[in-house]
Length: 401
Image 1 (cartoon, rainbow, N blue to C red):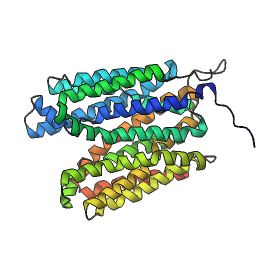
Image 2: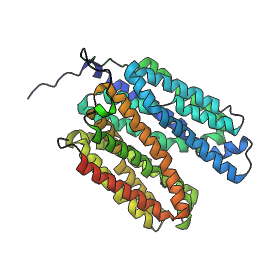
Image 3: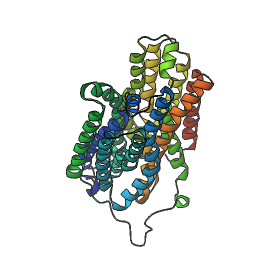
Image 4: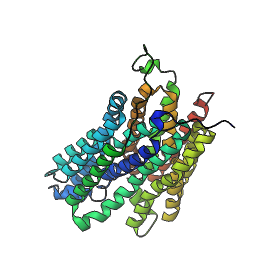
């Protein structure tokens, strides 16, 4: 039996880095999502009184952060390749701490939307963490480590709305933002003081500093993973605009409690499965897990169109989360292994942008189809898209993967 190879110098701090990144990603995702339960109330407190306008401005304010984050994720990835990933995480955590605190000082709805845009522009901690963990972790443990990080991110998506529903009655809406900013500032301190990024091996003399898209040898796998990243968030969020109305049709009581459980079920399933599926992928191959996860998710989403009660819907949403939990770590691992280290940050940054696109398109498509075609159409379309992507990943993967 051959002795285990010692870790590369840039891999020696990977466990500490993973712990810091999970904490930072969790707190920043919580900050981005905690206002969801009370956002209409905050908009109303800023002087908007018409019910239709309250709904409209709430949607604009919520989507603003993800929209601006999608635009800037590749930029931060490219700067991380050039100046270091730790610096980008310091920038993101400090920027989010300031933005969240300023949101609590908004005086009108225009300032609220502008500050939500600012939060997306200055943020990017979760995407930066994914890049750092992917590039500073031993390849044999990369999918597991990325699975743990994905669990932290999904836990933030789960805890954010719950915290947002609990804190405002206790401390007030504005103080909720101030507390969120303070917690993110702790993440900033942990990142600055505890995270250790070792420089990766320098490129050989004469090597190009970066590759253009046309010069990449593995373009097809990258495109397939971008599609999978987008569909992950699309499938997770497409139901949320219609879930309360859908449960009313099913006569599920109490509706608000059942809606909260259904919204949280997918994230909970992903939290539980992500590290395990990541560990499995390290053994059997990332492509196999991605294709299987997409296929299983399609099988779990389709029956949701014909459930008879709320508990069936919650159970199927939980099963969907279990299937989808394997995607984020495997997508990041495949991208990391498909491109040179010099462009890994940029490629993974575009993957994050693809996720943000899914976060925007999912609710928009769900709301439109649910209102104009029928709520069952939302589940059918999502299942078909997942199944199509599973087929593409199964037959489009590289022969040696």
